[in-house]
Image (cartoon, rainbow, N blue to C red; front, side):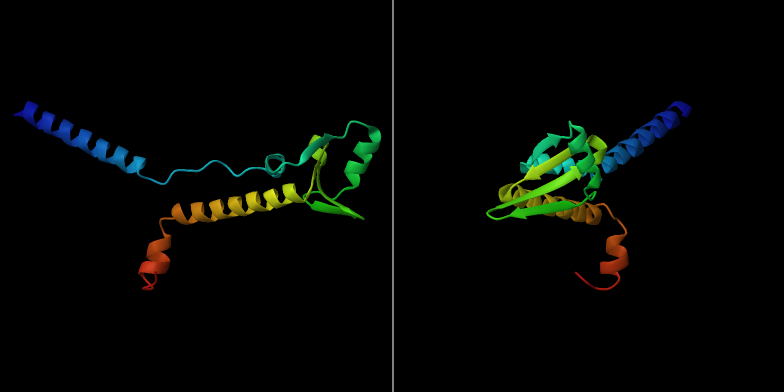
Length: 133
């Protein structure tokens, strides 16, 4: 009888563990981490220039950080982003800037969707209890 009880408890325990593992498999997955600005600039087609002279390094230090600069002169426009930490300047044209805008919007949308999907309290707090959706 004790052997039968032990077998039954073992089967129940294996069942509970199995159900738990299935539940974990169905949980929302984490997407790839957000890309950094330098990664997106390169993907958009911005050219990478390293500050390899004292003059370039000095100029890089005067540029605003975390800011896309628009440089214009008659007949020409370019976009530049400085990264003093890596001593790098990223320079792109209108096409690269347009691609960058698309990448930025895609990343914002992905983040927004991920947050909604991974928040189990959203439905009971905001939709089900309010009769929305």
